[in-house]
Length: 207
Image (cartoon, rainbow, N blue to C red; front, top):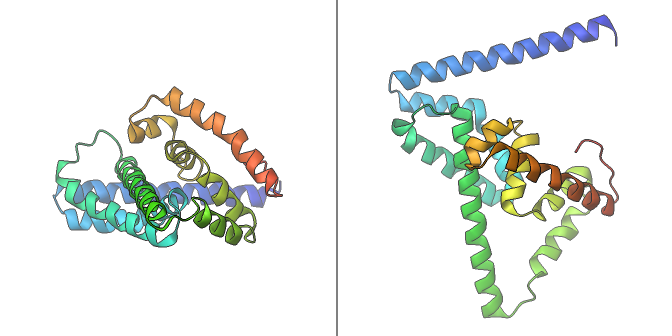
């Protein structure tokens, strides 16, 4: 690799770390001062997009992801006075997002079961329609389809590890489970995802 390219990558990494440290310092200062509106604004600016992408992968549709995203920050604002600092604010925020996603998925499953019973529709009709739409969307859409086939608690662990780039120790704080258990869960899920992608005509070495 050319020296100039290596230097550019190192500078980019250094710049990213510096921005993150600066952002964390601002968050800590606002939190110490009890300026919770300022903390919320900083959290949304710094982690809003990450949280939204996580929610979008966790739930089935954009509208639901937007609702969960909003609920996450509403709950975060309401809970800030009780924040004890046992984890980073980023980890704490992802914990809230994960729980809200799981709650929304449970409510959606209950609602779908009631609709199915009342209208006597085939159980997989909605999923078939979604999959047909996804089939034309390339790797990202196929990955979304395959992720939806994982159980929510497995899907959340995979997304937290590879999309949000949390360590297993941080995921342990988010999910309230042992790091080794979560790592084993992710390791078992990756071949399932690869097989699903290959069935959809996509081979990925990135998982």
